Image (tube, rainbow over all chains, first blue to last red; front, top):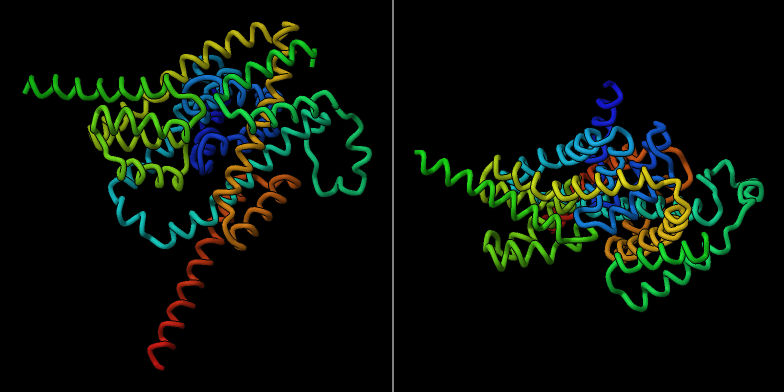
Length: 193
Length: 198
């Protein structure tokens, strides 16, 4: 019961601080994974994959998935509602003072700084995902920089090759994300990744 | 009286159902949903015009939360007040709840299956590409001058190579932007005063 309450509060925190769309929730999911043993880092990759491959907002999909893994159907409902509650309240307030809010210079300046910050957070999450998939390394911190050779002991060449191929395919042919997720799944089965 | 109540209920249901349809037919989150919002709510239903949609989007990007959900809250509120906002928000998240719960339940049952494991190993690589692509796209949009570049680099280094909590990073950036705006405001005022004296 207490666990469920903590989960609700954590997802409210995510909903309150994740600025700039669904992918901004990823760094928070990593933090939850580090702090509580609710789901693993590779679970998070599954959340992202399923969230991107199914209809609905990506952020909501990930929260639902994470909530389900943690506490079943009830967890899924509660985590999703917790995620949207803070922004719901904020939007209700903002909608009433719409014009004033848009032209306020503190807001426009804040926007100017928050957007690159949010991009950087997503980029950092992307780096962590690459580290896991390519090298089986969970995280690299500054204090490890002296002995990186000991950290990177294992290289998954097949994953690197598939990554490059997928990157090239997506850049060249565009098209729907779902198609690439299916191609990647097929490659995974064929190559026994 | 009775009549207006049924009409209200009808309105709430229409809001819920419209958002439900938008939630179930769009893939890939907020940015992909913009086109659908425009078509469904702008062209077909005429609930909002394009300018309003752009306003909602701009604000949804600066306020926290999932963009598509924020827009649904906005539109729901415009059509039906507080209750309309609640129904709109619930409508757009209901499909996710149902679909994801089913998939998650299936996945937990098949997690040990050899094929499912290999498939997900492949999908994980695809997710890497998706995130890297999104990051590159966002960098192009958000890193526009020296200050935004500096913000990007500092936040990236801290987020990637330390254990500092994301919440503190976001709060710190908000603090920096407030201080920066105050200083800039003072500087502009000084410049203005100086100019007036001349």
